[in-house]
Length: 54
Image (cartoon, rainbow, N blue to C red; front, side, top):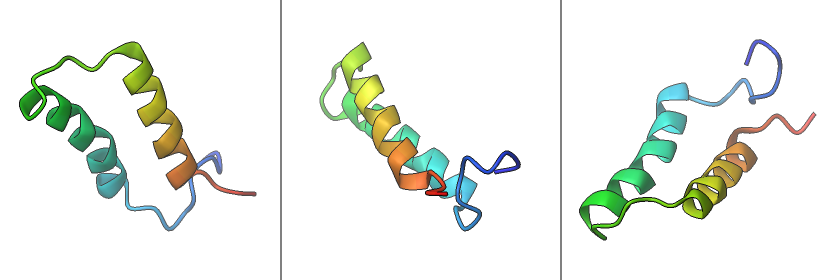
């Protein structure tokens, strides 16, 4: 946020949940370890969700 990479209206706790929830779901519900592609895709989605468009 200080560098302007993240929109100022983003709640950091919500963003952290957005990262953690799919990982926990993958482990507990699907009983699989997240692979590198899953993590890369997840990071890309979260970055798009919180990035400052400026």
